[in-house]
Image (spheres, each protein chain N blue to C red):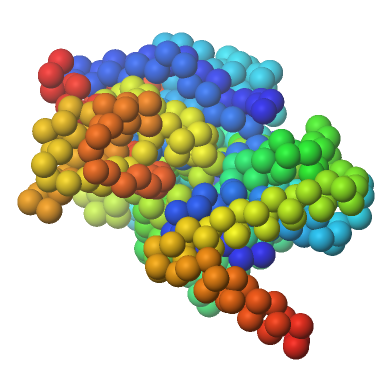
Length: 197
Length: 300
Length: 125
């Protein structure tokens, strides 16, 4: 367990820990309490997708010319896996906290739908943004995230939705980590000839 | 002279346009071995395979006389003993130098942060506030130094370095040679260094064993002192150029005469010519062998 | 220890010669270990194989003995062998001098003169 969190933290810099894990999350919590989860969720979607740039951007690249340092250790892929798992848990727990805070402040069940919508939107889109490195990719992806979130919020509601989305959240998390492992392990095998031989 | 091997391998890998074909690779233990070849000769592919970064190949590898490449993937101790530096991305560009240390602690059980910090200071990586510098903001030279600092902060027995001298300035290249000598000295005879270069002149003073690669194959290999007896550098007169062209591996000729490298045992073919002989440098031998290889390839 | 890179004489041979002189001059005790090949390579800033070859040359001449895992130690040098080694050196140097004198067109008498002058100069030191 300790190693899982250590792996996650290794992907964070000291600046990120202050801003991304403390200051901004607290601010967003305040926003949720004042405006409700449904509204705050839109901001959280963008925040989560953009913040991921400093953590796992470029991790799903298939070419052999990246992250060699991790590959020179037998624990390399394991650390990535643990980091991603910790990331899923952190995100789920954080959104849970936000949802509860929203629910407590305005009593609407929609808080939980919102929280789960954020989770699903972000998780699916991160699988896209992590394929490329560069902050510029995360911006358009976060816009897409915003749109998807709004669509979800418009059409989905009710207790049944919450249950289904919770299940989906678990499935999407598992698939995300599995897919990441698939990409990382695949990068040990290069099918095309690259010039830097 | 009794020689043990740090690495022995037999490897094969084909792409659509290129083939790596090495029936027997031997890297002696306790010495610094240079892998010499032009860009495109297959050096990076070979080092990637040996470091365990690339798994798509046929053949087998034996490390330190006792670990197979299968064991390298199963036992943690094999990769712990190997320190690799290379020209690819290597790190995630968004990492800060401080994170490199944290990640290293998770990756390698013998990594020591105090050692890493000392090396970062000694090699002047990033200057003040280095710990907060991002990888993407480092120059190629600083990144190379960082990789070197990383492998030197662990207990390893083999260093695999892909073109370590290329991004470094001349002063730092000499420092690298010093670092290699210190590394070999530390555990007298138990440690080995295997580095690649496309310009051997920079690293000639530290090279004990040379492997010259061309077109995905090993064209020549041997201890430097032995190679310097196998080949000889010949200078002669213009009138003997036709005869010289048949004997020499590589020849440059003009109206004042010719000079080039040839096999010592072929010297008798130049008997009667007015020639002077010199011990060739490793650089001259490499260029001659590589060019000869290219000509052979062309004739097919 | 001084080595010249481009003198035409292989570096390992230069090293071996200088160690040989020191050993024959008695600078090393019998049984004393020479610096390790890697230590010497570091100090001289050359490759390990060069120092190794130098030591192997010394071993070949019977001046040192190799011990697996420990290095090379100096053999006992008896004074007869010492004398013989130096005698051969004198002969070689004089042969060289004679050849040079011939090229310069000196007569035997002129050559003898030079030798006596040099000996006299050495006496004064």
